[in-house]
Image 1 (tube, rainbow, N blue to C red):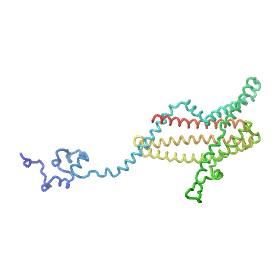
Image 2: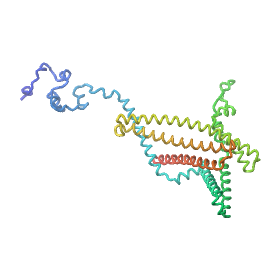
Image 3: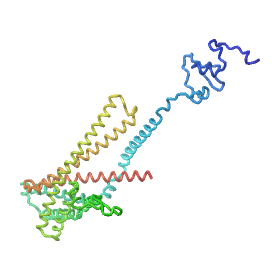
Image 4: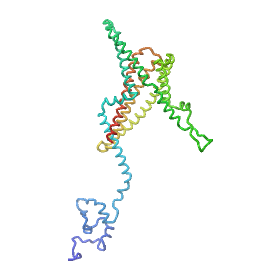
Length: 388
């Protein structure tokens, strides 16, 4: 039996004149199920279930046409967005891992790293100095009360008070020795600015070399905090040398008053800078919070938009932490301002208790900030070691 003698159940009436199936595929959208090659499968388009979209490779081979050309119109844009999303997700994961590793850093390790530095030793001695000052302050107040006056003061207690007073004076001199030559840091920054080229020698253009800026020009154009730090460090060293006996007492007193004025002005400048930075961080905080609020009101959750929500949450946590430490710095600067104002303006009323309390508060806040800095450094070192 030949192929021409086969009778089809549904003969085609519209396309009797079509000579080949290729011309039919060019004219009709749905080809007949009997005209598809035997290697493919086609569902009936008139059935209750819609036909599945065939693979691109099969249709392209059958029809010779390019199927779904719009699938590649924004391939480059989508790939770039995917790369950005992957990088942002990696940042979020890295931040979460760092928070997890922060709990594995022990306090002893942080204090060990702090005490390796001069600033860390200075803060540790400052804490002990002002803690003893506050203790002596309350002890003297208690001894001045009527109850303690009736009981009397034993000899061992008087000796203990004298020893603690000598210890406080020794801690003060130790701290002054620890910060000797502290003016070298602002001087190096000024010299780095001085090394920048200012003019060129026009007499020999072939061998022209940049001339460094004069030191006076660099001092006049230095930032106020850097210049005040330089002057404060030099005056503190002169005062320390007078305490050690290398210089006269009059020179030491004058240098001490000049150092107090520099400390007062630098504290005021740092407060202004701190307020400006707090305003910028607060504005950024409000922007992130408004984005999170808009996402929550639009129905977006951590499951629907995990990348955006996690990124905003991580950014908000970082900004909150930064704002917290800026507030700590502002409180410490206010304590320094109160402390140095008693020396600069020679206030007498409640000088001892105010300087003891403000000094202890400033020491605790600055130590906490330094502690957090060394903790973050240890966490980063631990994460780098795990990566390697």
